[in-house]
Amino acid sequence: MNINEIIKAVNRNDWVIFGLAAISVVGFVMTVYVSLKTKSISKILKLRKSKEKYNLQRHEYSERFQSYRDSILIDNNYNKAFINKILVDFHQLKNFRDMFNNKEKKIIKSEIKKLEDKNMTTKDFKETTDNLAYFISRFNEREDLDG
Image (tube, rainbow, N blue to C red; front, side, top):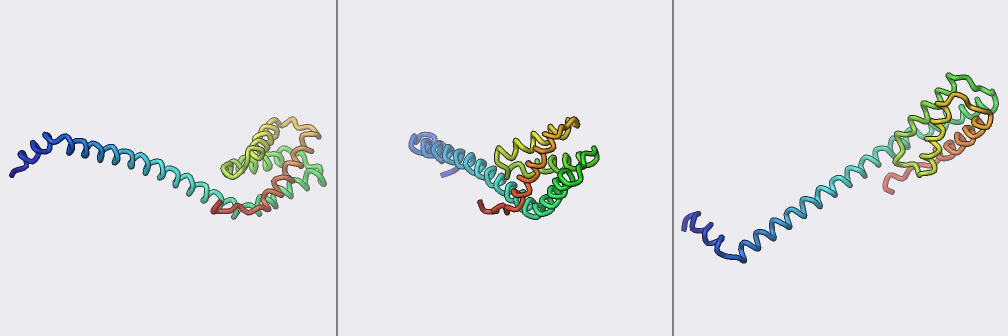
């Protein structure tokens, strides 16, 4: 029996054709499933890497935010260069946005907008010191790499 005879025999048998079609569909579904899982795993690995970076830098941010807060409250430091340092750090926090809840993301966004405005009032600085205190507390929390 040569290959042409085998192909003709397979083409005449409806059950073989049905079986091969079913195997093709199952193969396609498995390909889609594996593709989605790979994307999910990639996202989890990216978040884990971000958490590791956060855990390494959180004390540094805590200390800087504490010094910013002290400079505002104790030294009444409101100069543009100082405000720009705070602004830069709030922009850098966006690198960790996957870890922050919606409230924290909103605080970061409002602080950036306020600090970029450059016409901050005493009330704005009070709010900024409160938000700095919030993040100082937040930086004392270590991110769980497995959760």
